Image (cartoon, rainbow, N blue to C red; front, side, top):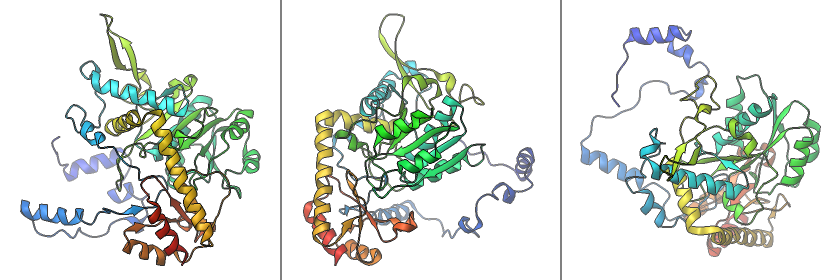
Length: 441
């Protein structure tokens, strides 16, 4: 795509058109403390060998050959070698949905298989072709619920990923919609009593996460019963879908959305990741994003097409169900291959390994004098309390090429000093022993 610079006169004309006097006024909503001031400190031009050498040095700073106990929405799972071998094929190596589906049947079939697998995984009737990531899947599912029943208030549990909730607030801040947060109970689950107090006939949806940000499994049937009693939809977010290898799918929910990174997408600072969204069939026309359907051509052959496209921005801009006009096709393909390689039994065994590692870690922490903050059922993440200074033992762990957990005080002031640790199949028991030993000394 060519770069066509704009003249100062053209910039002023554009500003006048949107009612701004200056570029400063246009970006006034961005806090000054997070804006870059001054000029970029760019050095002189470099030759190609110098540029390559620079980026080799930067790449060497990446976290290689380390054991990570960080989770909090991003999970370090083993990626079968076949993943990169297949997605690197030239016919797949694009992240964009084709606008001429009749000549891209292979790509559309891959997306259709992704949708099918998401339905099987979540227990829902229909799934879209993917979204940007888990953080956008939450607000998109909330907006979907509002379209479905026309109500104007939303309840979201505080145990939902804090950054997901921040994105939701961004979506809703300039709309005539109310957002209320539901506290978590001593168990770490959403407080059912507080939820009951906040529910009313104006609530469009209740959004929870399971396993939630603390790694705790929510009581979905009970939450669904409460929400449905007053006509609200239940949205279940899933940031760690590997958990569905052993956990019962949230079939009582109306909408299930989340992040698919743990299903074959590599860890990467800033992404790209892949969001998913599935729902009951009666909410199909309220769904955002692309939908690939299976059909039959004029000669009776099976084919695939983009279906129900009138919901989308490129067809009905003002009345579209979403401003997301694309999907993460390449990352969705990784998820499709990952689930196909593991299969139902393989995913179950993978989930059991994660749970077993978390149980082993919980026992070791208990033996060392630390304890778990919450006692409700968990999957592969634990909130550990009673440890020493997180900053000090985190540095000691880094010397051993181990990345410790997340200090929850960053997001929950009342949990300052408590640490969220994640245990996947990639964590060897001797590394868990090292973590416990250093963190409890």
